[in-house]
Amino acid sequence: VQLQASGGGLVQAGDSRRLSCVASGRAFNHYTLAWFRQAQGKEREFVAAISYGVGTTYYEESVKGRYIISRDNAKNTVYLQMNNLQPEDTAVYHCTAASFLNENHVYTERYYNFWGQGTQVTVSS
Image 1 (tube, rainbow, N blue to C red):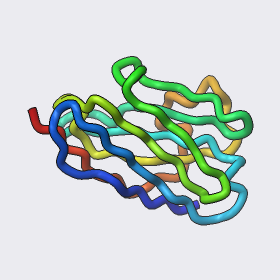
Image 2: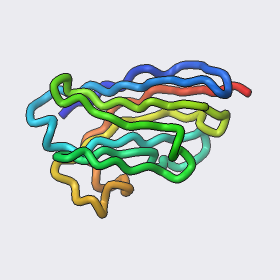
Image 3: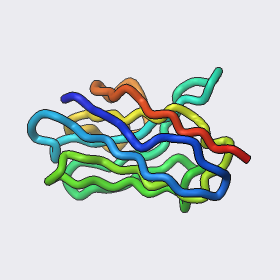
Image 4: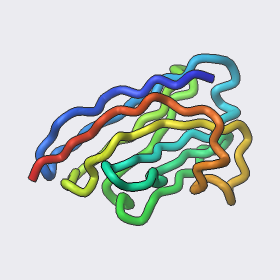
């Protein structure tokens, strides 16, 4: 699976932005999809995930209520709708995928084996 993320850019605090990640390959619906982000000088961290099958969603605490992850299996695409963006959300956002991922592992980077190149989101105050 190859992943191509897009939608990043420069926004102001309080703005919204939607990221997209298109996957190539087959059986997209077999994959748990997630977004991680990495701010400058910091480790990459989990942001949100959506499971294969029923599409259960998971969020990092600081984005709950502001971010929404969704998927369109017909388009092989996962989205991250980001609302009320804050300067601390500034980071490179990476989409990632893992097939039939156990729900206990969705927050853990090492269980994902396909990664996109990342898209920069910069939030000015």
